[in-house]
Length: 259
Image (cartoon, rainbow, N blue to C red; front, side):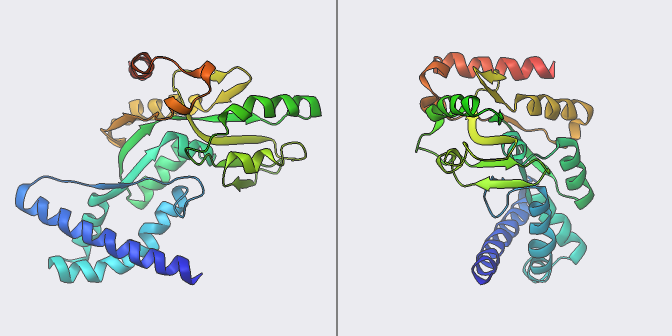
């Protein structure tokens, strides 16, 4: 719609201005800096297809003529500069929530010439929806402690036919838990990466292991890893640990996987 088009046009122009500045910095200092765009559930840029769309439908068509004139370089050099200075922040939690397989996503970015500037190591909540009403009631009880208002906790559900359905926040999803025919929910609530379950609830920790294995197979994917759990203060009481201990355990778990 027109509102989306206007927003994308404005955002694209701002991103191109960033590219122009970063290209100038590189030409004067030799240092290459990049702005990493992070897709997020329920956002305009939510998955790998939409990141490719950002480049193919916005940055490259609008950016080539503007940057050719601005930087006095060829169209080929403009495309190289765009893909050097605008990259992807791959948040493991976010891509897991939209059910993307890491190897497929990395291959898609490679085919499009889009680089991964940073991988954020993070885990989301994951629940399988039971059939029995009593089990659903218990699941709701277990999810209620995660229903807090500091952050949005988007939910992406997978239906029986494999189609996805999004809820803007956990309370919205919980309203339909009793009657839904969806089979799985992935919830945008960052949980400690060193735990694969929280009592009756599971996490997407397995996706972190897959991503780290992909990095070990192909170290050129990125040279920047960041453990990104920030929800310590809003975790349910029985999931909270001393902050220093929590951060140390997360780093140790990741290093152990990489070793």
